[in-house]
Length: 246
Image (cartoon, rainbow, N blue to C red; front, side, top):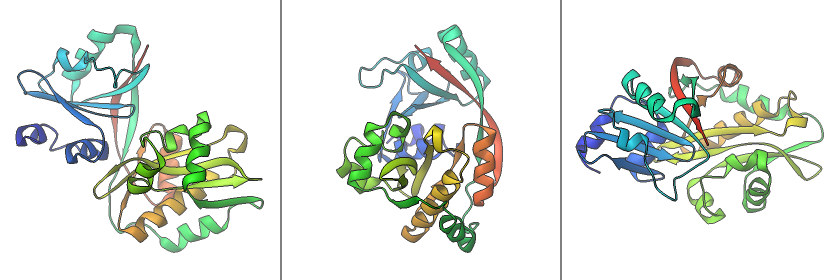
C-alpha cells in the first residue's frame, strides 16, 4: 500500500477503512491521478482525497451492487455523489461510536448474558450456525463478508441465540481488521424487544476481550446508539452517508 493512499484516510477512525488498508478484507481503489481513493468492503464505500467522478462511478463486476452505502470525506464528495446518482442517492445520518479501551464493565456484561429469557440458548457461531445464518435472509449480514466457514473461522467471531433449535438472533463480525472486529447485530422480527440483542452484544464483547480484540461499533440509527451505550460505549458524532439503490 502506497503511503500517499494511507495518508488520504489518516484522520478517519473507521475500522472498515482499516480492514482495507491493512489488506485483511475489502479492496482499495484509486483514480488515475492517485489523488483520490476509495475503500470498499461489503455494503460500504468510503471516499477520500480530491473528489473524483471516476471513483464515485466505479464499475467492477464483483463489486456492483443493488445497494451500497457511500460515505464522503467532506461536503465536496457528497455533492459529487448527489450529482452522479441523483434520486438514487438517499442522504442519511449515521452515528459514530467512540473507540475506547478499558471501558467495559465485565460483570455487567456477564449478567446481561445470564439474563437471557427462559427457553433461549446463546452459543458461539460455529459451522452449523454459519450455515443457518447463510440460509436466513434476515441473518445473512452476520456472515456475509466471509466467503465460506473456513474464512469465517480464521477471521470472524460471533454468537447466536437459538430457540427450539431455530436461529432467532445473533451478533457477529461484519468485518475484521488486525486489532478487532466491526460488530453486526440482528434479531428475527418476531423475537425483538426481548433483550436478545443486548445479550448477544454483551456475549460478543466478552469473547472479543478474551481474545484481545476490540469490538468496534457503528450505529445506523438512534436505537443502535442506545444499545451501544447500554453495553458501555459512548457516542462520538453524527456523519453523513448516502444509500445508493438500483
